[in-house]
Length: 313
Length: 285
Image (cartoon, rainbow over all chains, first blue to last red; front, side, top):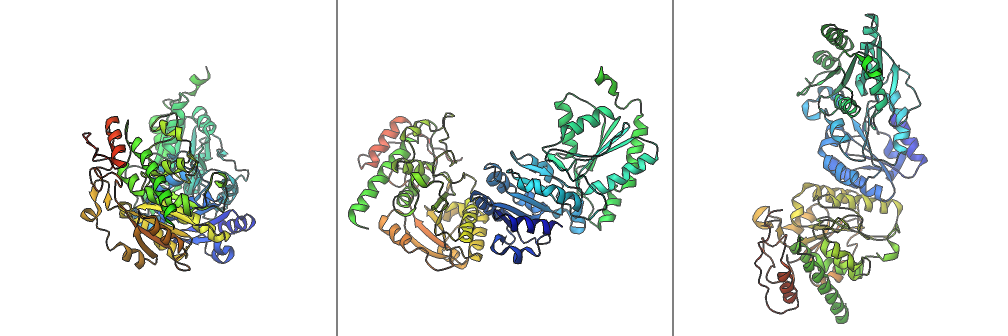
């Protein structure tokens, strides 16, 4: 679906150029479809980004592909300096971020990409939940005049997302007064299960697919903080600089202090293995996260959690 | 190139050097690196590039990218002499009231892209050259790089990719002044045999005296050297060219001279007495 969308977009609009640093997993069939508007620079993430900036100077919209760790970090300074400073519409498609690098090992684990990309002025940052969400989001992202970083999750899913994606808007799956779970990207699927398990325990649980991380949907975060006892952030990202930080920044900016339980990788890389084993080992399965949240919720005690009434006085 | 033409270019270059020297006080600038690239820029804007005040948005214009960046005083001076930049703006050097500072930025007419971080613009120029090829335009894309800059691996990535995509519309000009920031290149990370390195990477290379307008004319007249090959011109230059008291010295890269020293250096530029330099020049920046 990703490849089809990109092919159709590029065929319909001459401005689009598809680039890759020899990471063709998502664009296997595009060389023949696009001819000289498909450019593979080989294993040169920095040069690909510099060249993408040059192409954008000529009015092109380059959609570039590389493995997340190398795109976001090897080429970071090129993204920041050549794309960011010039505010060029270079569209970064970041492949196998977070847990999706499964058995590759820590060299390939992009667990700080949200942190560093959102620190670049002008850069927009998105994290779709699955393939369906991804293709809902991309047309708007690619048509925007801003540079963007998309943390690609192209796994198929049965979940039918809201198709009315807007940049800067989250997708509210459900609302709850006890707990609201904020999640993005690949972890959406597990977080959905977590929410279902908690609901069966009799709790009122909200679930939000954050999907647009910069600009972020501040209203959704504030609403979760005001209307539920506990906010939980879930992400396959380091604790520093990701969604937990975004929530903290948002609440502080709005003069709110509430209970937030972060589920993230704290000062460590994850154990490389098959994806399902990674999730289980690291405690990121739906059931393990539900257990963790429930025990926190009970331990802290409902009464000691957010007393939201004060905000309404 | 006839003698009158050469004399004209030399007098333009002399005025550009005056502008550079005048910028080397009250905060200073990278005077040595600018003086080595002066004749290159004067030649390119006067004779080679089809870039004029009225075609700066034309997609068929030639492009010049300054990748080493800290030679931008030579470009400011050249653009003034070409009538593209107002001379008065140099009074704003290092003032927040304008955008005339130590590295290139696009608030200056004719500057296609900002630089300052080394090893970036070979790939940006590569992207522009790729697009010119895709669109079938006949313009040239020139990127001036420092020799010290060639320490950066990304320069060599760009050469390899340019070779792969047969970019004979792309010209990398190396300002071979034999110095990087604070050291002679051959004492730190030796570059020679430099032409062989580029040739081994698939480029067609010419090596010339970068201060000789006749040499420059001959080198650029032959471009593209060979169909499908990246063009590389190694321009042998002298850091600080024109000022014997600072020429080819590792400690005269970034200079912040007193006003009196600037007056003496201007005298020295015009072949009068040697300047007496007492200011400590900054070694590290």
